[in-house]
Image 1: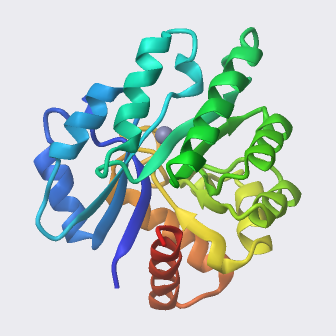
Image 2: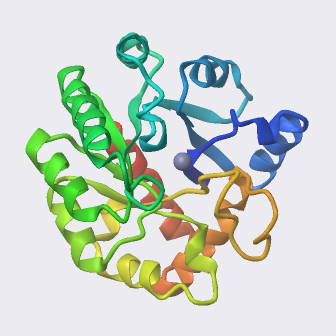
Amino acid sequence: MNWIDSHCHINDEAFKDDLDEVLDRMLENDVTKAMIISSFTDDFKYGLTIKKEGIDFKHSLGIYPGDVDKVSEEDIQRYFELMKSAECDCVGEIGLDYYYGKDNKERQKEIFERQCIFAREINKKVIVHSRDAVQDTYDILKKTGVKGIMHCYSDSKEMAKEFVKLGFYISISGTCTFKNAKEPLEVVKSIPIDRLLIETDCPYLTPVPYRGKRNEPSYVIYTGRKITETLGMDIEEFKEQLNKNYSEFFN
Ligand SMILES: [Zn+2]
């Protein structure tokens, strides 16, 4: 059974010199499904051109919370046009980041909420980035009634359960392999297994044993193994569950 990277940025500059080899290593490691996440319309168009026989790519586009001050109304309309297109599977990553953006919370909330409302209108799910902003994130998701994935989940297990109740999937990144990573593993144990996904968020958040180097989709196996071990599950059974979750997410 194959692995899945539910969140990667292989359309990033970090992969421009050796993308072919990165894709080969995905196949070698049975990572044959992945979602490419774009924060800019050009990245999105480029992402659509990334193809590899044997790998099933999904595509997502959204205005990242760190970019909300840079986008004009015209830009937003350009994003919306592409989000509507058949090639765009999800809206995201969108959300709130109060760690890097302390001074523009209102603008972040406005752009996040507009994208959630739009996603509902066009009947697509959202990929959510939330850092130091869990309550506001929750409130906007609840108010707008969208469903989707909490990407690189880093909040409490209590809040994870609340997001699950809203219909969200919880995606765990390579940080769960770090030595001091208690929380993500507690989250893994406390949510229903049918709402769990894993991801790399590459080129960032590289799991052990490659921590400190550039991340890539094939490394999702280290996150998967760590979680399998934590849950005391059989690895094939876990992969089967991941595949079920991922396909149900898209239904
Ligand atoms: Zn990301």
